[in-house]
Length: 281
Image 1 (cartoon, rainbow, N blue to C red):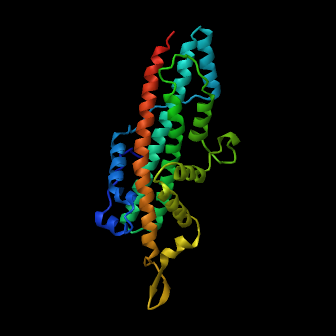
Image 2 (tube, one colour):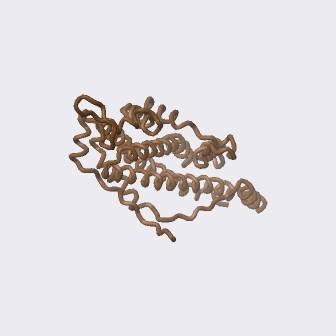
Image 3 (cartoon, one colour):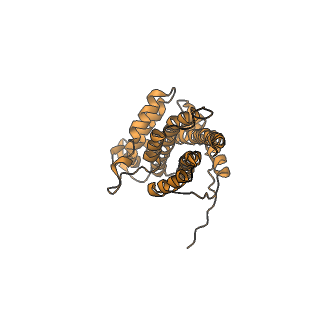
């Protein structure tokens, strides 16, 4: 059956439901619907499809060498940047669509009283947004620093390495060791410790990991109490509210973070492409 690409709509959650699960006045939960709307707006403005010129190392080298042979070193320099910026753009779009589907799935899971699914999707959403935010926090300043510089040629090695390890990250057995990604727990730890007011991100991530793994917290969802006796049933126990709280923290942070990170990164890429017009031969 042919699947037609359709825009995904991410609905808001009922404001009363959100308030009832925010007894401690968490600022991220207070902004949950606002951040979901921000991500939904991004979804409306993303291209449904985007042609991507993927070059292997050999293909790039052949194309680059041909330009040098024609006495066009500046064209080769532009090609190197264009190839890198295309990959940055691709990584951003792939990350955005992944996050949109994850957040949408989590929100719909909460709406149908499925906190276990919501928690697992929210954890993946947080990881996706954190991975992209950390990537752009390192790559964007490096590109910004080049724009407008008098030097025509710079070493792109460090940028290329960072991009390859992020875009093509894989722990599959057949993948090159070079492509093994930075542990996402490490990235979230950096965000939690180095960026102000992000402590709740690390706390909720730890709880969601407990739910995603076959540990007691995820199983406790099916434990309730009646007449002083613990009952195992499909009835949601008190743990459900705790899981929903952490899921909403993660969803709010992810939905609010990626649009800002993506917009900043794409703006830098556009300015870099414009700046490359100086180097024509």
